[in-house]
Image (cartoon, rainbow, N blue to C red):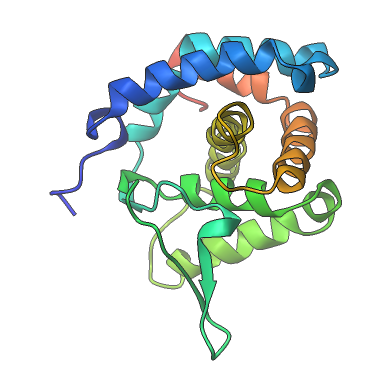
Amino acid sequence: MVFVRPRCRRFGEQWLRQQFKDVHQKFLASELAADFPEYVRSLITEWDKNCHLLYEYWDSKPPTLVHGDSHLGNVLEHADGSAGYYDWQCLFRGYGFRDLSYFLMSALTVEDVKQHEREIFDLYVNNPEGYGVKVNREEAWMDYCLLCMERFDSCMTSLTQGGYGHARHALERQLRTLTYVTQARDIRASLDKVVATGTLF
């Protein structure tokens, strides 16, 4: 895995960061964001200023191979009922909970989040623990929650850049989920803590 670059050193990273900055401004000026709670608008503004510090923080975490664009639309189902990912052009070396958060924020409704999210998270954590990998569940959960900003970026990008083939109603559903999650989990407080101290713990 050493030949796969980490997030902050992957090819095209600087271009992507500038694209996201442009997207943030365009999204905040759009009709979609006009009725957003002030909390969420402020969160996007602070994320825009400080996301590079979060990328560096996540790059300091135990790495694995990350798909990089693990949304629901990039999932395939085999005849036996098992599933997998395709479209691996965005892969990088990073924190594994990034792919989980990115996927679930693309797939779950607000009601799904309330009823099933923590159960899914625990099932995900059980797998590496079954192979002897020690996971600090509370730390992983906090990181997982904060990592929702990665999916928020991609959702805002799709909505402001023509959709990239994603159904509009699906993107708007994701916005509703992300709006709920960021407020319910006080993601702004987590972001501010990493910016101030370099860690959530």
